[in-house]
Length: 276
Image (tube, rainbow, N blue to C red):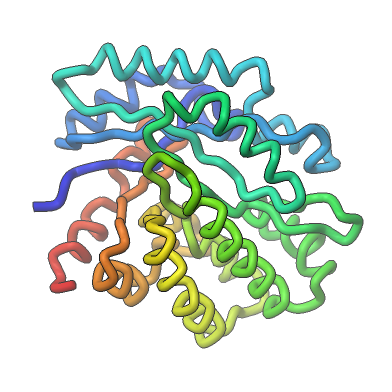
């Protein structure tokens, strides 16, 4: 029996999401029969990580809001006790060259965090700054593809970062999983093609790293909602291989609006019914 658990969701503290009250998300989860619900908001980012101030403001909460978010999540946990298990988490970013920033967050709040979704959202740009891999297809083309020259190089750099993220996550004391491992495919239908062979080779290398580090995967279905992707961010074969290796596989709606909660669960449940 698969635990009905949405392990990747957002809140009104997400500046590229909805300002809806958390109760609307959780009430929907209860209505859909979920037993566990992880609140996993983006924490603050280092100042100047992205050189566009307007974009930077959308990416994560300002530092002064992190304590407010933690209290908000813990209040939901108390409020819904006995109705649904709420776990308090964060979606941390892999920040090469600035890992101390992430360590400070973990050191300060780790004793209250039950779940970490650890994601790669950024690649280095031509000037050394960070560039978002999941903002828009035009942005990717102008800020990432123009820097790396080919999709192959951009994709390899992305998976290099995922591998490094797994190593970092393996040392975290709480439950942890890598977020939307194939996020690099978000704009696949609007960009030069990515070779399926390249993706498979890179993901095959990742499986033993996950198993050795006891790091799970966020089986993220948000790609189903993206017109340029149209599929979950975890391939079926990779999910099956992770299950065979005993790697924790946790469904994640990546809900940024209450109506996103539970989206794609049927696909995940179907995969879980298959023999591992």
